[in-house]
Image (cartoon, rainbow, N blue to C red; front, top):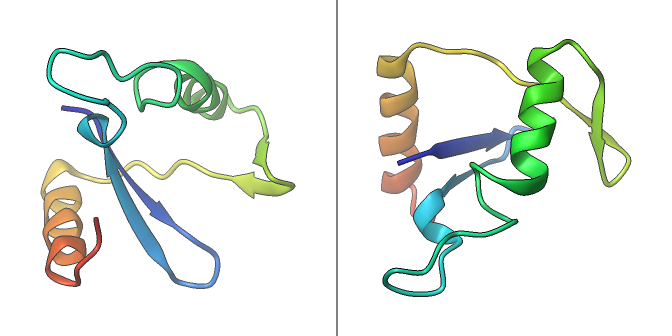
Length: 82
């Protein structure tokens, strides 16, 4: 399952998974998902080296190891993040 952790300039973090965007069992995630639509396009542009903004804020994409991602995902869950 595709997952994302947003880290904001002020230090805040939020996490999202494809399952967060589906409306029900058997329903596809759709345009707001992490694998389609604007997120997919933004990630492709960031990987290609292009600047990407959202609500007038510049976005960045930081590759990390799978182990580091899992540790941060679990830490966010333990802090009560969705």
